[in-house]
Image (cartoon, rainbow, N blue to C red; front, side):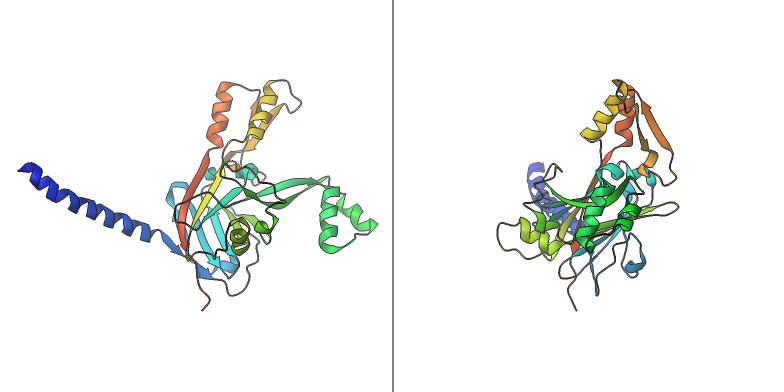
Length: 285
């Protein structure tokens, strides 16, 4: 008799769980706002008035979305500096999935790249035309520069051959602004170009996208740099900013020499973070 009752109750319980799951999934689908005009990617919130901010409580971040016919714009704000981790080195990867399965088939990694003054001159001349001697002299007054870089990556986060996927990042951009107690990132994802370049067939952007955020972690380059300090290398020691906010007032923490304890501490400070969220794309009214 007890078994008969359980057989009747179990399907009902399963149905209730299914309903709860669907409701939860719907609650986590956030609305993008239509961008009437292109946003200036400066890391500031001035263009985001009226856009609802959504919170990821586990990492104390807030984010918002806007879109137009070609691009997805993302505002991402860190309200607790410890969750920045090693983002200055690893950058932020945005995964775009149109299947609803949270697949890492399309990813763009946004990072800052250090280049020499001559490399910077080459970039400026491609953008603006030839520089005169005085302009070049002014540029060379600094030994190096940091530029924003966007790369298409595979599921492991490793860059693909960028010459093969150059169209996918055509129009990609990001910028950062530092406030007293927070750090704000702003991204432009060239959604139409990304999907067209990485799809085997003609595919239109989906009405609902799964967007994944991923940053932090201990890279192989960081590990090698750390090990140099313990192997008598000329680097001497590896230093990263506590909370990941280099040059922004955070305390700098150095690791002199390689040791198991130091490597464990480094791993804790460079924890990898990631999460996904569903976004309903706005339509032009």
